Image 1 (tube, helix red, strand yellow):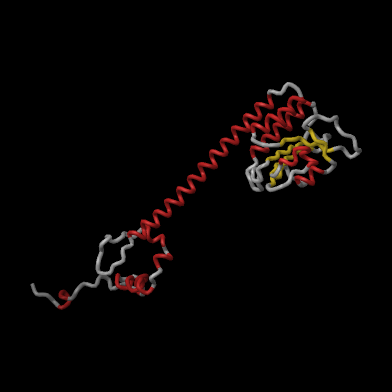
Image 2 (cartoon, rainbow, N blue to C red):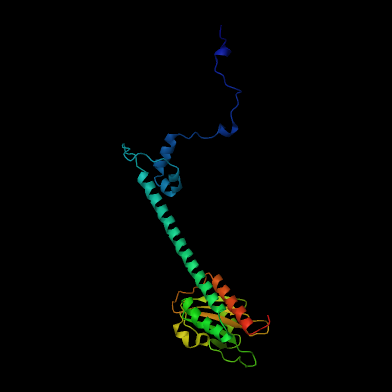
Length: 250
């Protein structure tokens, strides 16, 4: 069979070239090597690439830099960071469980009170031990006409508007660290207080404003921004219990 010139010519398909590849530069190993030589800090600045690169053998020879140790050190740092984060999470979780157990024990102690006076005694003495605090008091504002409720051990008479001035209008709780206890709130125990938690109590629309005050000698026991869910829960238990003992309307 005789080949014609057309048969002998190499086939070129349909003669079309993909528009996307027409002007695309051809990347070669030589160009990659040239780029890396001109940018020796490239891998330091793009360390995520080390997660996908295959390291050379430790004894490559011929002046080839061994990246294996560099990658190992990066993995060690990542592992150390993960371990530190895990340990911090475990400590936080254990602390939360311990605090939760203490609050549950405190609520059970309050439920065993046999009278209002016994309830206040449990609140201000037993709960201080259970919660590892130094001072716990209930503060009730005097009414505007100057009359005051009958004195009860553990209940402090506050001046009018003091709850708002201490906690803030519209706020339910404030946590402070590195403070000097206020004698107007903590009475004789103020000298023991170096951090505090003040929580608003509401005994009803006709009842005077009140607060529950926790004081600790540890200056960092209470801190701004600290989680306060358990403290709020305990304050609501105290609030509801006092309203029940005194038969106050909501």
